[in-house]
Image (cartoon, rainbow, N blue to C red; front, side):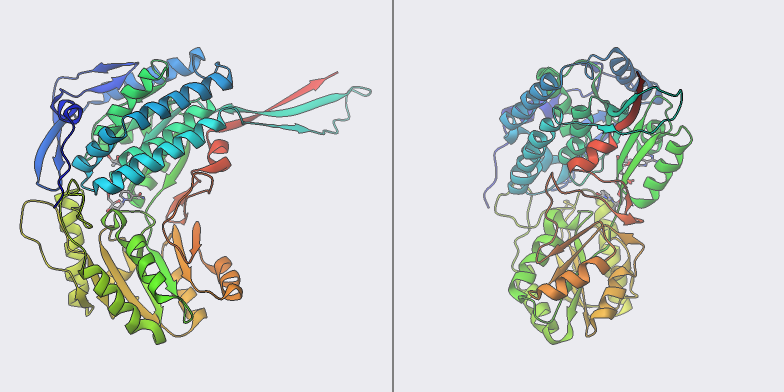
Length: 496
Ligand code: NAD
């Protein structure tokens, strides 16, 4: 065991009386609070306000006033970019502090928090900062016939949509906050973020760092509180111009319905039941490594996680045995233990839900090859579990488990396996494992998913659009696509 020492500034932050960050300052509401747990121990490490709607309104009004004043959108793009880069550098300078806060409240490995939750977030922030100076519209040739003899010059400019509400889940709290915040800010929007109740700490710290970096008061606000009140309130608020939501499909749909009532734009990044298809010719060792990363990253609490594995019959035993061997060798421990490969789930609720999925699969006839047992202790641990002989009709092959559970099935016919892969309400991500280029190129277009990897799984890049089809959501994050989603085209037509 190699336990990471908690930084003094992390201990001091946890011990603070937390508030909401509204209009460039801390607001400390009286009233109920929500505990933040350390998933490794079940202990309460902080309390954050469970705010009534009044504070949500204040946050939205502050963001709206900042938008109207053009204090942010009116800056030269180069100045917006410079401030966003300052902000990114501050996040980088506080990397260890943010990584520890993420690990202590979310449960994940400190190694991953450092590399991905902060490291990749910093890269994403830098990438998105650069978009502030690269937003462009179009010049348009038009053929307007009247009044006769008049010439026209037309163009379409991209303008920020307005106030953005970002509703964030608990699996990558810091990272997904920036996925909403940074493109919105690059475009000149102002933002209200509502983090998940389980993991609000890094978003609160981020707001403070943004203000320190020079992002003006009111441009970035954070409110904590229940999804059913504050989250739903944001989705239905008439001063919000765009809601960007990541979370469950059921809640995402309700957010979309509420947004439509005000013609608020919305983007939904929802769940997935992502297949990994391993063809006969695949490199099985690489596929096993891919399954470990794709299926067990963040204990499988990843919307794009690989969770159902279709392996060609001729390679099935080899894959199951190799995967079970690799998975059963993983050490389990707290996220702050840098040697632990598997860490607790985010909450008792998630632990209970995942264990129930395993139990049901067992009853339905799946073979538990490794894992699946309840671990003693107060932490929210679930053993990484490989289930073999799963049938496509079982719950564990159809429902989003969002935990460290890998369900393996076999196939013989490639047309049939594509049919099975597509036989899901979800369509977020998928991967195909083959070295046959012709097969890869012919099968990729037939897979119903927002992202398809070949010989890889779960790898994202800020320049590669990310989002789902079918019940996995609407809209895309990352790349040029997200810039278009936080701006509206305004056509300008000049007669001369
Ligand atoms: P959730 O959808 O309930 O919560 C996501 C966010 O939405 C949180 O900030 C939450 O407070 C907020 N929210 C909750 N109810 C709301 C409402 N009525 N209106 C507006 N906002 C609301 O997800 P959860 O309960 O945290 O997790 C449940 C399941 O969702 C998981 O088991 C998993 O399957 C899925 N999930 C998906 C992702 C993803 O990245 N797509 C992330 C987390 C969870």
